Every structure is written in structure tokens, then in C-alpha cells.
Length: 459
Image 1 (cartoon, helix red, strand yellow):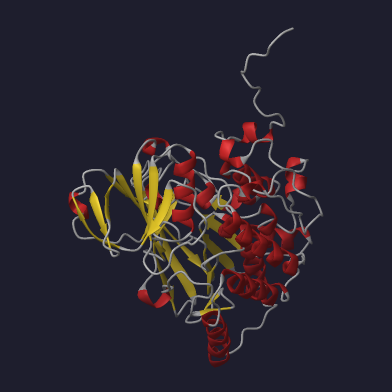
Image 2 (cartoon, rainbow, N blue to C red):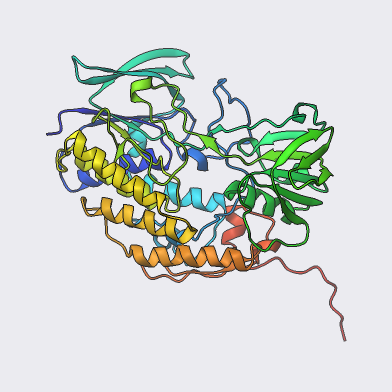
């Protein structure tokens, strides 16, 4: 049965995956429901839609994106490749395993531009409030058209939340930081290393943001980088100029004091302390409440909200896999909404959810986490016709990536891998990552490195 209406909030990778899932069905000649997608930014892409703005945007809305200049993929592109649209198909050539953001955004857009997805998206439109009307068995969603400054309502039989969870910063407080004379910001507002050249930086946090921003600032000329961790250090072999210290106890002026008794002066502080799952448009009874983890509670198969079977969440997990995981979730959500996947009763769903939560609790290492998420995607993919791919080989690549970073945090992006989708082996980038200061698409696809300006000796 397809005479129902689906609303999608967000046109980032998750929302676009949902549109592609329905389009895939439509291409087979099958009817699909009425689908409408709403995106608060001016364009699709979610996090990959880079903006120089911080704080609020053109229309006064909080900035969604946390993307910054000089960001390169921090995992092999072969691990996130779409099963139905390869990098080789998009670029027409082999490229390196670790492309910069502009290249990845071009790839994301390539698949969606081949579809009519844009016809289903209303941009510059933000969801203000949603509630579920029991008598109608529908969601009522209040939107603001930011361009026209108009408010309107829509009604949906199913609501898909694809707004991501890397937009609302988790900002800790340390005694004395309000008197710190230099820059204090969250990674959400970091837009590139340029402003920190020749500065002594203090990064707070021990996850991917601290690792990547620290290495980028080192590469682009910061004087020194200190990374303060709460529970455990990142633990890779840092080059001279990057050190890890235990948690900050307090600040006095521009000096930070650490729990090991040491102290040091800094020019700037960047909080790489993660993000909150925040859904200000949802009431308490519909709101997913979780911290960053591999299997949020209250989501059956990580997708269907357990307290309301018509509410779908996509991409809410901590992520090793990304684009292809969002796809498998979207294909599952599509077939569930189309009535092809029966939903067990709530008690059975509770048992299934708890099983996954218990299994996550048993994981300890990065490799354990990779295996857990690999098993999760295998579980989802068996329900749908999403093109199967060798997940075990992808998991092996992830584990190799973890090892590469431990060996040398500065050159792991120079390694190459082979696509499990079409067998294409990545081509080494023409310039070692540490020497490549231009992250533009044009520069990346240029096959020749810059000509040296050294004066040659003539005979």
C-alpha cells in the first residue's frame, strides 16, 4: 500500500539516502508514497555543505555544519563507498583513498544529481515543532519558510528524522576559563588552521576532532599542540610539537593547569568535546534521548523509534561506516514503511534492542567496535534489496586504518586500498598529504605535482 505520506527532516547524507531508497523502488516500476523532504540549509549535503559562517546563518538559524577548510577524509573512502554508485563511476579514474572534503561532497552530489531528488526537497525550511495526533494517526509538523518568513503545517503518516547529531556542541566549563584572554571555541566553530599559525594551542578531548584538528594545525604551522584528555589518551605516536596531557583542573589567565601538576601558557583553546543529540522540534515522547554510541536505546534495528512505530531515525549511531550504513538504514526504513518488513510487538523489540546494547557493552577496542557495526549492517542488509557487498573486507580495511594511524599519524592518509564494490585500486595522491596545502577539487584531480622553482644548473 502506497497511499500514505512520508516527511523527511534533513537533506544530508541520511535524508538523501532515504530519497534514494524510494527512487530505487520507483525505478523498478513500483509505486511509492508521497514523499517530501525539508532542509534548513540552502543546499543539500548536511555536514558536507561547508560554510564559512559560525554561530548563526543568513536567516538567524543556528549553523548546522561543523565542516572546516583543509579537512581530508580520516578514513578510507573504500569503507564509505555507495554500493550502487562507485568513486570510479563518478570520477572516471582511480583516485586516492583519502580525498579532501570538496571531493567527497562532489561524490555525494554525483549520485543524487542523477536522480530527481531535488524535486522532493524544500530548502531554507526549518522544522519548528512536531506532534503525533493519535486520532488521525499522523504527525503534524510546523515549519518555517526562512526566505518568505512564513509558517505552515504539514501532515505525515511517517516521519523520518535525518538531522544528524554533530551540530549541537557539548561545551564543558573549567574554572577560570571565562578569564582566558585568547580564543576559546568549540570544534563546531573551527573553520581552519589559518588563524592559529605560530600559536600554542590547547585542544580538549580525545576523539577524532581533537586528533584531526591537532594534526591539521600542526601541518599548517601552529607552534605547538597540547591535547588534554579526560579518561584515556588518544595514544598514537605524536610528532615533536604535539603532546597529550591529562584533564585540565583550572585556568589562571592564559595558563592551564593539569591534573598531573603541570601547567602551561596557551594562545587559544579548542573544545573537541563532542556533540549532543538535540531535536528541539520534537516533544518529550518522540525525542530520542541518547549519548554518542554504536547502538542508541529505544531504536528497533537502530531505525524505528520503539515508542512510536511511525517515527524513523537515520544516522544516529556513532560511526565507523557512514554513507553505506545510512543507505542500509534507509532501504530498511523504506521496506518497513511499504509493509514488507513486519514489526514484532514491543516486548520482542525490547529484547532485540537490549541484545545489541549488551553486545556493545562487551566491546573494548576499536577493532571490536568495527566488528560490532559490521554485524549491525549485515543484520539490516539481509532484509532488503540493497546491493550486497563484502562487509568483511571493509572491516579488514577499517582495522588496517586503525593500525596505520598508530604507526604514523602524519602519513596514514598516503596509504591506498582497493574498492570492494568494483575492484578499483586507489591511486596514490600526487603529493604526500603532509605537503599538500591545497584541498580544492581542481588541485586534487590535477595529476601533476607543482613544478619546483629551483634554478637548474646549465652546462
